[in-house]
Length: 263
Image 1 (cartoon, rainbow, N blue to C red):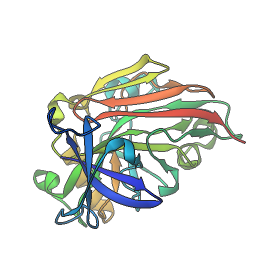
Image 2 (image 1 turned 180 degrees about the horizontal axis):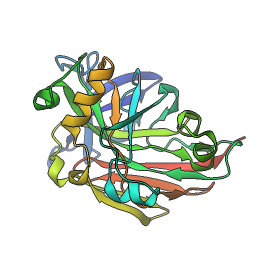
Image 3 (image 1 turned 180 degrees about the vertical axis):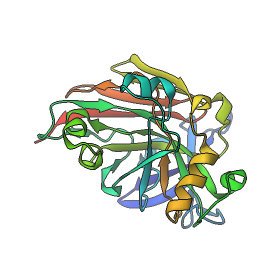
């Protein structure tokens, strides 16, 4: 199931996306069925069914917190001059960094080097704490694409990552939540202006998704809609104003965002 968060006539709704049957007469290949309330519980249709073109896709969630994982692919750890940590390396991004599909990534005036980092994001489905790894997927609503945008020069200067990864617009999410992702087949790519810069597979995570959920939930309570960014493969690189950066996860879709200078 694909669950989106959409804007229609100035109001925000959750919706389920369906592929329209060829003989259905639907004007778009994809249609959206609006939901009553939110998807963190029983999913109930509200009654209206619309073409995808009638709504604007938003970030699929606005989480209370974004828990990101550093150096969780061997090749990325190596390109950053290190090795993967023995335990997951956690850091937080603020909810104010979240944007949705096609929203602009704004380059801050404080930085001269901003990088893309393509990632698979896990969306938590219910409140939980101290989740055993073998039960981790029981607390997952689904998965989406993410870009852990990073001011690389500030990351090096500060010696910690809050400012470098916390700017407004530095956490694109979307285009929707996929509830039935096959992790073993989830290839992950990033492209800038159509040229592939990152090409990895979620199966190559150093600390897999159950381990990440167990570790993070041993530290803090996870709430419905919270997001765990699982790490990025090798190939991170700079983005500049005028670029379009796209993150694709096989089995989910593609999240694209233009890059603009600060005003």
